[in-house]
Each structure stands twice: as structure tokens, then as C-alpha cells.
Image (cartoon, rainbow, N blue to C red; front, side):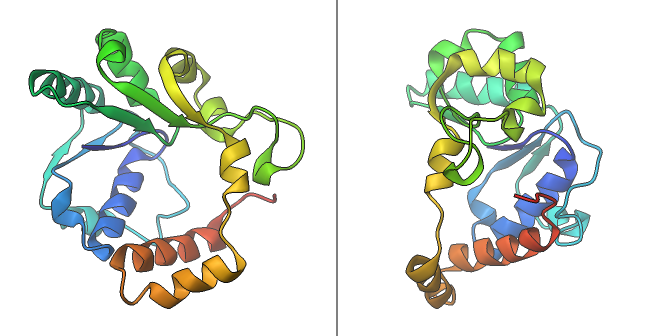
Length: 196
């Protein structure tokens, strides 16, 4: 299950489906659940569109919170550990926790968000990071249950450039996931509105 949450979740699902197709992983994801903020544009709209999502062979759900709850229920029934990885503002995860608070005791929640000691790119003072500040009510529900946090401090220090970036460029023809990631990155970078 992959949930496209936050603003423009329908557009995010389009981009996810295109990424999965380019990476050769489309058939490996059984369900895409589209979060509650379905309308709205994203900076990737000219890279991916509804025709990409039309190629997704799995199940599409428009009740993301319920899909999350069902996934946790299935993992409990099958006695399989489950991790919920939050990489965006988290409206659907918050709604799932509010509907079924018990899921926080049955699934580990990991999140990429926040800023503890440094700001963007590991420099400057801590700042309100997008994944948290874009939906503060949801963040207030989700983040008290996060067991592992990857703030800007970590993400900023984990940049790939120089020799490592050249190695990625070199292997992209042999590794479809890398090729898909680099294509998506190239499209995103041109449209990224951040000045930092």
C-alpha cells in the first residue's frame, strides 16, 4: 500500500504511477490509496498525468485512512510487523489514527519531517519544515506517535553530488529505479519553487 497524501494527492498518484512504471515496479504495488486532499496542482503535473495512473494494474482507493487501518489490521492478523513511513504532510495518517487510535500500538510510524538543530541543507537555524508546517493539525496528531524521525538535519547532510552523483548517472541504464529517480528529479528540479 502506498498512500499519496497531502495537497494534490490525485496528482501525486499520477507521478507515483509514472515513477513505478519507469522503475519497472508497477506490478509490485498492489494498492495506491489517494489521500483526502485530492484536488490541486503539483509541480510535477507536466511530468505525469492521469494516463500514467490509468496504467496502474492494482487497486485504487479513495479512502486512504480506511486503507491504512485495514493494512494494520491485516499485519496484526498475519503477525507481520508493519511500518508506516510518512514522507509528506500527513492528513490520511492522522485521520487513520483518529478513527482507530489502536494502530499506533500495532504499527511503527517513521517520518521525514521537522528540523532539530539545522535548517535546509544542514545549514542555518532550525526552521518549520514543510511536511510539518503544511498541515499542523495532522502533524499534532501523527508526530507524538513517531518512533523514528528523519529531520532536515539528516536529509540535508545526505546529499548526493560529485563522484556519487556521477556513479548514479553511470548506472542508470542498468538500474531502472535509478533511471526513473533521475528522470523524476530532473523534471522536479526545473519546477522547484524553492529559492534555497
